Length: 324
Image (cartoon, rainbow, N blue to C red; front, side, top):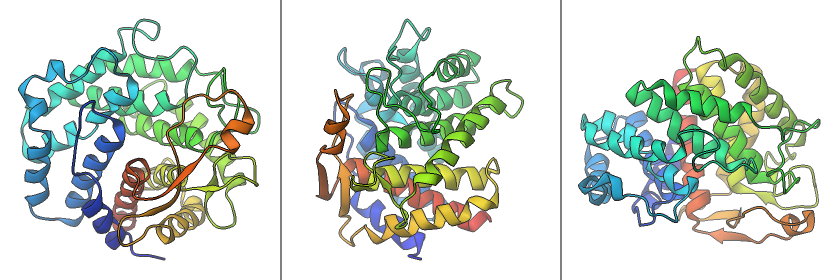
């Protein structure tokens, strides 16, 4: 098995070094990943100072961080802010999390959340609203999140998620958004929250479904239940990250280790020393047919989306191995 520490260091060198406008989750996740790697490895504050430099323009006027055309994928681009606030002690960064959280509400019908129930929003909402609740203590954030998550009706009898109501197909990264999103939500939900047990049950049901479709290589595919589709890197990183998080935080048992190790081996073998990745599906909104998902192109090489999620996975593996 490739050493997660070495993979994490390499990915942190190649990803997480810019935050362009409009802010987008891919760059935000990579910045968060760099912070996590530094914290896990006990590094110097050089990384922190570099990230502070990168994000400094957004502290000037947090209320103008997002534009009128931005959506949930943009709001999740500040997922690093609470981690940077914790690392630096500078609570000004938390204003960015609060600004993003406000965009999701005030209710699931009066805000940014898509009534078509896109699985992407499971991740985007959990990442932002969970952090906003943890950093502010405002129960409205966790109430909105749990109401939204419990409104989903698109988990099917095979324990996989449709992309959304209008795209009833089992897209790989879509299912990965659901897996990692629920892991994020459970991370921030208080132990005694009335929705926690139900969401864990939903999450476990989904992971059990995913486990039955894991390829012998350890990867998951572009369309989860279609073995003729390509082995997709970002989905495998995200699903692997969610499993590692669950083992580390003990809502998953150690019986999940073999599934996790297969995923890590597969992902790490497909990461080059130059940060290049194999087969990352390009950006994908809801598509009109299964055939469109099957033939959706992928990129080989440097890829912000795949690199960011691989970095989160690597950082989670470093933490999981050190704590178990």
